[in-house]
Amino acid sequence: MKKLIALLLTASLAAAAAGCSGNSAASSSAAPSSAAPASSASESSSSAAGGSKTLVVGASPAPHAKILAEAAKELEKKGITLEVKEFSDYVMPNTALEDKQLDANYFQHKPYLDDFNKKNGTHIVSAGAIHFEPLGIYGGKTARLADLKDGATVAVPNDTTNEARALLLLQANNLLKLKEGVGLEATPKDIAENPKNLKFKELEAAQLARSLQDVDLAVINGNYAISGGLKVSDALATEDANSEAAKTYANIIAVREGDENREDIKALVEVLKSDEIKKYITDTFAGAVVPVD
Image 1 (cartoon, rainbow, N blue to C red):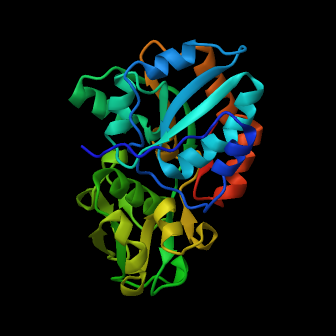
Image 2: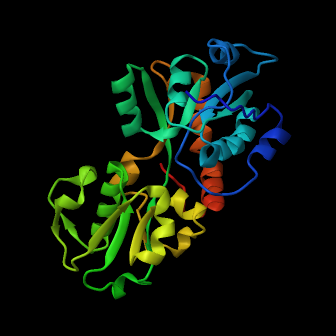
């Protein structure tokens, strides 16, 4: 198991401001920072020093930790000090939460959480959906969708979740038609109509941006597009914030079952869904991260 790597966003506003500086690249990965005693999160969140509470939240470095750094300023006004522990894998944030090393985490969407609970016997629930990281269609050898030729090659993510999202996005742009009802479980085998006889190249999501010179189009996650030197504004099409994928794969604040109605957790979600944080997300991540209602 990977060691936790610690990052502390301290109680001071100066430290919180420093924590939100840096690149605007988004990331959908998550795993640990530094290990705290198993009881530390629940103790710190319930103890008050001069009326102030400390809320310990695990998050991936970007965009999640950056968004939390901005939210820390508003939470400070409510008497809540936000302590963020950064993670770099998808397992430890949930095990640390279940073990009460964290009060909440922010790195995952609900389908992943549901699968994690089922496989690990954990009792973690969503306290609120915050943002969505859309896929985009990017031009490689073909610069415009209207110029796409018969037999063109389209690179798509090879993981089940994102491949289905990619196919739905291609369908939304009239490039293919899927079998009725396949939705977010779609694979290339579920293509009912392929008028341009598109060929699909399935690649690791992180490799898609580098594949553009070899394919006509590629469907790329926003975070990988940015890390690959692409601008989301250059995408030929992107998932809509009101799409099926956006509603299903919104990133959430996750907590232990029963903690979703805690006042400090409700305050965290309220701040993250505020107009101020929505504006910060929109301005900072340039379409790679989209706030949800």
